[in-house]
Structures are given as structure tokens and as C-alpha cells.
Length: 431
Figure 1 (spheres, helix red, strand yellow):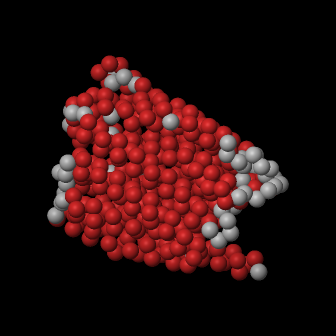
Figure 2 (tube, one colour):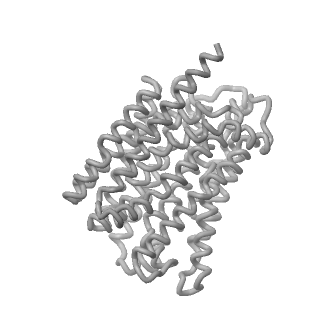
Figure 3 (cartoon, one colour):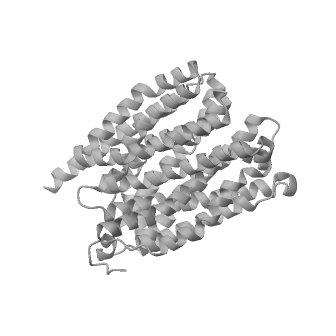
């Protein structure tokens, strides 16, 4: 390993990107499986009188993982800001692995009664706690090793690794549907992808252990104690809240087009499970292609124009696009609409992630980023499946999730304008 004073070579940068995003891949893979297999998990651990109630309970446990994220963001984020990126990211990986092992190994409700849902909830809370600081830790690491003027492109690989996780999860779901009978998937088959997630843990540990600390962190003279990190976060609360609202658009769009999409396709549009999973797989590929483009465009033309343009586009098209889909549900229509939303999401997120690393004070960068991101995921993204299910149930309008995405776009637009105005004023007073 070369010393922390020598600059990284291109090869060591690529290797660092792979090492740091591999853990992020696993975090997201385990997190999404829960959304993908919600209907099977509902039957196994949450049997209820109606399918709607059982599914709502499962999505609520899915959501509970998000409520743990802000706590994880503050505690683990502060820890990563104190001890360094490398050490901190090994800890987040360990906690995630523990939560996933728990979900794989729990017997069904029929076997152990109430212990089953309680243990699933515990596993989910551990996953959420760890995921709270993982995204921030990875994004900040990438921002800190980026070459000058390429920060948008570098940080886009954090979200890029999430898309690879969805591709693998959707591809495995597709293969399971082809290889097993529905009854077999329902009773034990859904556990196979979770098991795969457990088996790759040791491999990712080895990758993470060889991660180098960032020069920016090593060069910092003073590292705040955990208590000081909390104080600094509190004094910067307007930035954290505005950051959260800016992320709202990302998390809502993302969970709508990836995690909720398979359920929406099957339950609402009555498409086959294979068709729904295939759409999800293609959307993940589309996201993966647009994210680095969004990051690179924001490096070239500035972050603000990208953020404003994409939020306005979402406002203008989200509900109309879903209305078209609800009126003529088919595989090709679902694919077209979700690919359009994927384009908006990818370009927006590619520009948003670097902004979030730039607006946070350097000494609390991971904790601040993680807290803003986790709050948005907790308040907006994580509950997108529940809110979409409820909106459709109570309005009778199959396109109503479009209202939820439009609301998130308004929040993001206002937050973007506020943050850039605040930044301009800070620069004026600094002169």
C-alpha cells in the first residue's frame, strides 16, 4: 500500500472505486430483496386475514428499516467522521451482514409464532441502522478521491452500484420464477437470493479491508469527537433539512421505479411476475447508464441547471405518464413510462449527490450527508410503496403515485433554489 502522501494513480483510483462500492452493492442488494419478495415474506412471517393487511404489514417492516436510517446516519456517520472512512465502512458492513443473516435463518410464523415477525423486524432494523451511514460514507469517500472537476462523475458510482444490486436481484428473481413452481418460491425459494447475499459477505470484507484512507481525511489536522459532530450538525440544521428535501426527489423516484414497480406491475396492472421483474431489470440498466451521464453533465454545465431542469420535468410529466400507463397497461407501456422516469431520476441524482457532499461542512461531511439522505429515505422514499398502495386503494386512481412523485419534485425544487441562494449570500458576505 503506498503512503498517504503520494497521489493515487488512475489504477488505484479505479480499484478504490470498486472496493468502496462493492459494500454499497451488498447493502442495497439486501435492502431491495425485502421489497422484491414482499409478497412471499408477507405469507411466511405476517399471515393476516386479508392480503392487503398482510402486504401493508410487510411494507411497514420494510419502512421500519428506513426509520432506523437517520439514527444510523447520526451515530455511525459521526463515527466515520471521527475514525476515518476505511474503518467506519468496515463497521457498517458488519452490521448489515448480521441483519441479513438473521432474515435468512428465521423459521416461519407457523414454526415459531410471534418470534418470527419480531426477529424479521430486528434484522430489518439492523440493516437500516447500517445503511444509514453506508451511502454517505461511500459518496464522501468517492468525492474525496475524485480528480479536480470530475466529482460528479466519481460520486455517481455510489448510486451506480445500487443499480447493479437491483439488476442482480431482479435477474435472480427472474431465474427463480423460471426454475421453480410458485409454491416452491413461496415456501423456501425466496430465501435463495438472501443466502447469496450472505455468501458474498466474506469476499466484500476482504475488498474493504484493503481500502486506503482518503488523503483529504488524513490531511485534516483536527477530527471532531462524536459529541462535537452532533453539535456541528445541530447548528447546521437548515442545510441538513434542505439537503433532505433535495434528496426527496431521488428517493421517491427511485423506490417508485425499482422497489415498488414489481408489486405495481403484478397487483395493479395485472402483468405477470416475470414481466414486472424484467421491467425492473431494464430500468436498473437504464439508471446505471444515466447516472454517470448526469454526474458528468453537472461537472460540465453546473449542478444547479441540471437540478432545476429535472425537477420541472418530473413535475410536468410524472402524473400524465402514469395516467397513460394506467389507461393502457401492457409490458411495453410500463417499460416506456418507467424508462422515462429513470431518465429523469438518473440525470437528477447524478447532479444531486455531488451537491450534497459540497454543501456539508467538511468536518461533519459523512454525518451531514448521511443524515440528510436518511431522513429523505425515511420520510419519502422508504414509504413510497406504502403510500402508493394506500393512494391507489383510497382514490381508486391507479396513476395516483404520480401525485406523490410530483410532491417530492416540488420539495426538491424549492430546496435547490434555497441552497443556491444561501450559498450565494455566504459567498457575498465572505468577500
